[in-house]
Length: 126
Image 1: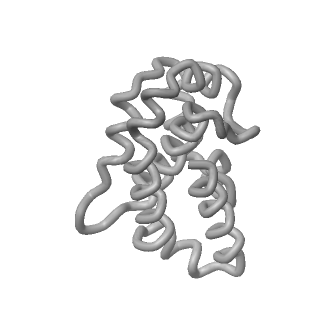
Image 2: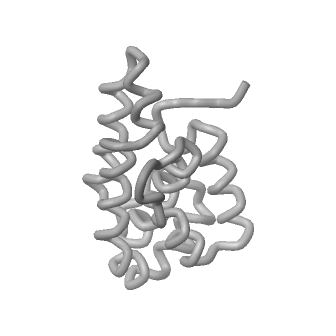
């Protein structure tokens, strides 16, 4: 059984994405994570977009304390890259929150409002 938690780094898909990113950080991986399917955003894709948004937040100086230091440090050295991706990150995170399989799955739980608050906190830092 996979891990699935309220925060961006508490599920296996996002943790795997972040681990791969930490091994070879590259803005193209962030861009790819924001390239969400037009019709339906699957849960793994949505989780990756949330993780990628945290990289952008770190780049613009608003890193989550939960983001690994090596990833946050790499991103914070490139604020221009973060600023260039800020709006698309916000759009992607809002799409995940409002119209994705991940949102649907959380809606079936008693923690849906808490999950939305955690996603909104990411948006606020963007």
